[in-house]
Length: 171
Image 1 (cartoon, helix red, strand yellow):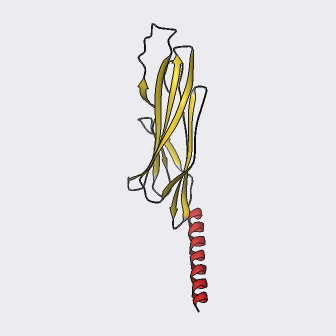
Image 2: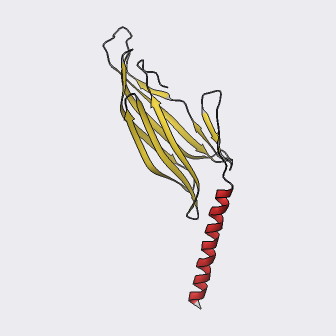
Image 3: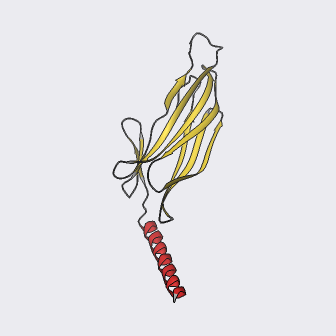
């Protein structure tokens, strides 16, 4: 009798999980992305949530002297992606930071990259982090997944880049 009840409960649980995951995949639509007047890139999702990616912000800059052509300067910048629930609460924030050296008008190179993750929304997890740098660019990557009853119902991939030109300006 106990085995029959346990088997029935497991069967119902499996049926619920399969029905929930198929219902979630049926309602998915492509996100809508646009850039607002402040340069923020906003991505709206079908469930009412959205992600905002800020333009690159200069965090630090070494003392620069435009007359010193042989000098090498250091600057760092960051770009953030913030995901909001449909009610406006923050689910998570991913920030990419890049450290650059440049010789005005001659060269620019990324020397280091790093990332920070802050999760405040219930059910969100971060995985597959990667941050690299090459030439004059810093790159950051990661996957945020929202799970409900151990089933992933939302997956958002973050893939950010910071580039620095030979005058220490970011693009």
